[in-house]
Length: 253
Image (cartoon, rainbow, N blue to C red; front, side, top):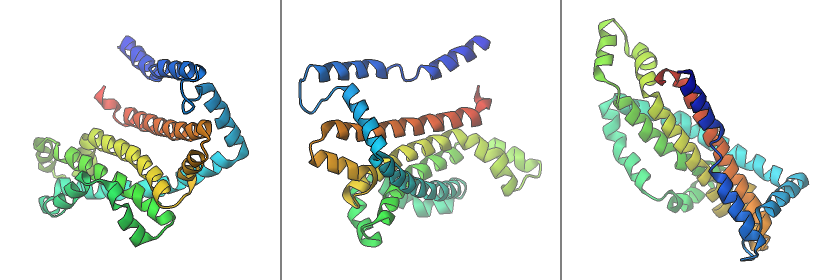
């Protein structure tokens, strides 16, 4: 058992190793000057520190982080509530199921003009875009997790006098937690996508504004620096949710 734990920690510790060959290839291709649009990775990293020191990247990160946190928090709370209700009550599921499936299959980017009409050209629309990208996947995965609980466990809890408000936090939610956390993680990743799309299409603020500015100015290293910032932010967010999942579902091992 100790050996398995060591191997498990080793796998987590070296989870970024597969990125190393790609980074080396990027640096070599950039050094060969194959294309003006592929600068060396080392140059991109140096530029990243320059724009961070200048304060432009930090300001963009703060704006982007604020809009993401607000939009994703709303999607998380409302998505979990609706997902639990759809998983537990068949009438609620029948009422909302068509709407959830419709918005899940529809390209959310196509709804951006509608959000612009409803919320205007500002931060509110970006928050709404993050919400739309995150909300539905959280609802679907939460509903799936709740419905996957073995009915015999619920019946057993009821036979011992457990009420709905006792069974939900002690039986249903712990059993559905792996699926719920998967939906939350996917919702967070989609929320980052919504944040960038919103900043690109609706209001030129945050990281989206930097992408547009550097792209239109053909400042390619700076453009890649912003793209890397979004990628690193996404990876760190995924690792955070993986850590939470390992911490909360330790009973699976």
